[in-house]
Length: 338
Image (tube, rainbow, N blue to C red; front, side, top):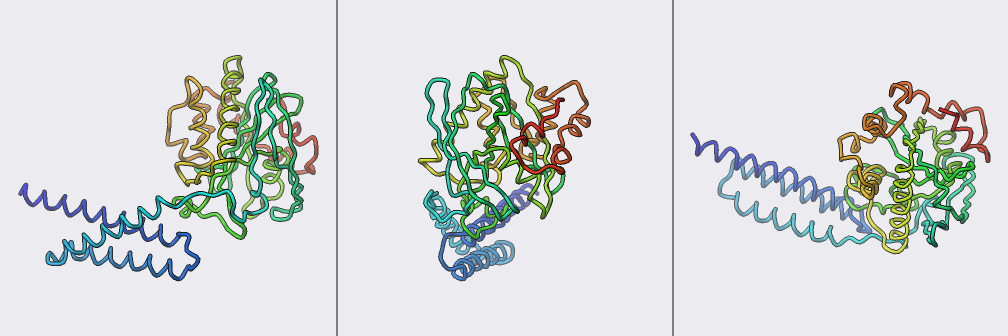
């Protein structure tokens, strides 16, 4: 009986390995960088067929089992080696809204940020590009706002951080997949080194206003949460801002890949926060980013004077701006006193 159980678990392990490795290798090739989608699809289907034949042999044909397992394993490691050698780049033909990378210089408490995006939109895909440079004083950094943007239910949100330097002076940073001209976003492709990582450093009128006014299909709901402020929190905010600046400058020189889970708008933020003492431990509410505000509330990082439901209702900014055109007053309009 023990021998039979051992065989069962051994076969189960190989079946799971075959399913996982075949699926990964087929998708990796299908989303590869070949100039011919027909070639990619043909190779991907061939890998899937070999994986299926190997699985059938494993279960029903002991005579072919070893040979097919060997062939499948060799193919898998060839694909893996090829995939690991795919390199990110900064010199592709990018979509216009991701064509320029921000970078910054630091002199004492002064940080000069270059290529801050501030597009004028007529619609989501019609806009007048505009960038500017600006110097920020770290000693005037008052706090951080977290924006959570929802468009497909409560579990998933796009997270944007905005640094408040006082006097209606805000700098927003949205960590995104950098798309090439004509390229759309795919969650599955995001696992396979198909997008570079970009920090969209922007005026709130751009990166927040785009989502409150112009994203219509589907419409996006935007919530603003103020992270708790204190002397310690302000020091943490400075460290976090400089951590962002360091990564922004690194990407300006050395591109990196976006990843749907490991390097996305929320997981990268969480990794940045580790620069501060007492940072939040990793939680499933970080991975399911729609629940991040709730996690921050439970951890005492948000206003505790209200229930989370009431705080969330107050954080919803779309009604505050729906009857207003985007103007110089946008940042103050979305910040009624809480």
